[in-house]
Amino acid sequence: MQYKDFSNVHVMEHPLIKHKISLMRKKETGTYEFRKLVEEVATLEGYEALRDLPLKDVTIETPLEKADVPMIDGKKLAIVPILRAGLGMVPGVQALTPLAKVGHIGLYRDPETHEPHDYYCKLPDPIDQRLIVVVDPMLATGGSAVDAIQSIKDHGGNNIKFMCIIAAPEGIERLAKAHPDVEIYIGNVDRELNENAYILPGLGDAGDRIFGTK
Ligand code: PRP
Ligand code: URA
View 1 (cartoon, protein in one colour):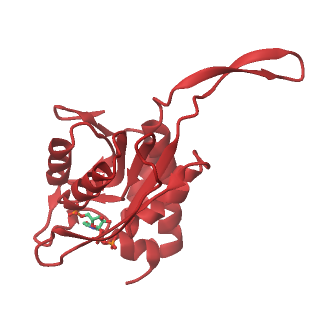
View 2: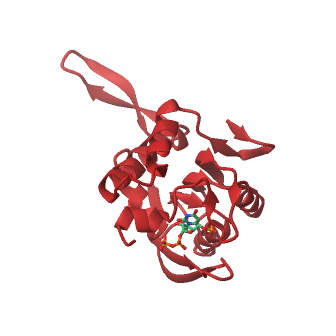
View 3: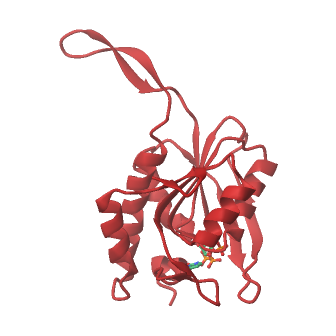
């Protein structure tokens, strides 16, 4: 489903995605289960986000005869998690695209200003021929996603999708306006941000819940 009048923003409607996100939100969901759910939601969202991969007919032999069958048209993919929490989504997308290269972008939010600070960037080189799927479970103010995508563009990336699990309205609008060429896939749109720029009702700190650091 499209979000408001942003034609590049797609909100998931599948009941399995909604159900798994609800399980993630529960405060009693532990690290192991949380991590599994992040992976599963990433796979289900990835399935939607990659539905426009081009196909070409390839001739193969079945046990009975030769046949021209559709195969993915050699599209080169890169998965780029925003550290740390984005790492949790990587295995879920790799389940669909095991040959994709993986780049990493390190950003953390300043606890006072909530603005992102970058500390790491390593992308597959060259990046310009690849479809790049940027993953991060949380889109809050949108600052991290906007900066991460700008870094990828500065390195030559030009075909970019962004996948998150939960988004706040503020972050969606900021990202969709900053990068209108990027297709954005969202598991659920939550109500609002609190005074610390955490998403409500949200699920807390995604990185801490994936890695058990709190
Ligand atoms: C979280 C999350 C996003 C960012 C979202 O990361 O994983 O990257 O916050 O917030 P924003 O939309 O307001 O920028 P965090 O900075 O907490 O780092 P972590 O993943 O290392 O815990
Ligand atoms: N980052 C998180 O991990 N959770 C939020 O609610 C906002 C930013």
